[in-house]
Length: 189
Image 1 (cartoon, one colour):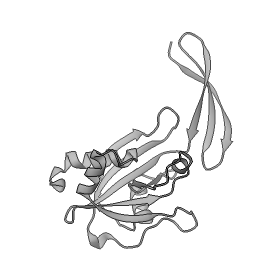
Image 2 (image 1 turned 180 degrees about the vertical axis):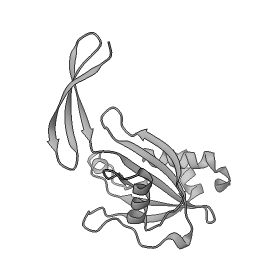
Image 3 (image 1 turned 45 degrees about the vertical axis):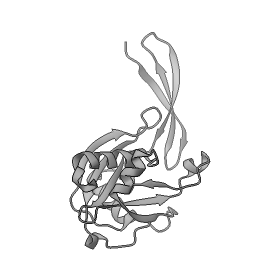
Image 4 (image 1 turned 135 degrees about the vertical axis):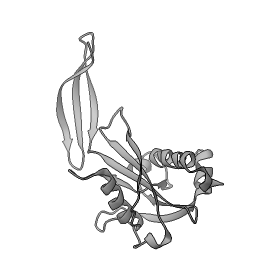
């Protein structure tokens, strides 16, 4: 007999929902698990193959600060997929809002569970080539959302070095940089 969820209750509802799942294992033993639920997400790593750079963002994250870290993480532009929105369209929207770049071609890397032990979030990941002319705005996020985003172009070799020295700490960004290295190794030579 498989593990089942018998019912859930909402412990908190705001930008996200915190749920308590009442579960039962294959032997009939009851137990509880907490679930964070905020819907699907997307992330995209824009890279310029001619200049061999990538567009990334840095922004303060409350959980990171709470854990005692003081430095903003290097991240690929990312965000939530709105109800009924295609993840690729959401990735393009996030790239424009956060990094000020208009993307046309996306290379789909698949959809992953970002934290399956606690969250329902499934993250669609993309790589996207761009050119300097595609930088149409400053980025920085949507006004009024207090994201405090800093946009940076970082050489691909520097991103690879950060990954190799355990200093690229955002899991989504690490996965996309490593996939870019595997699929397009000539960009790092």
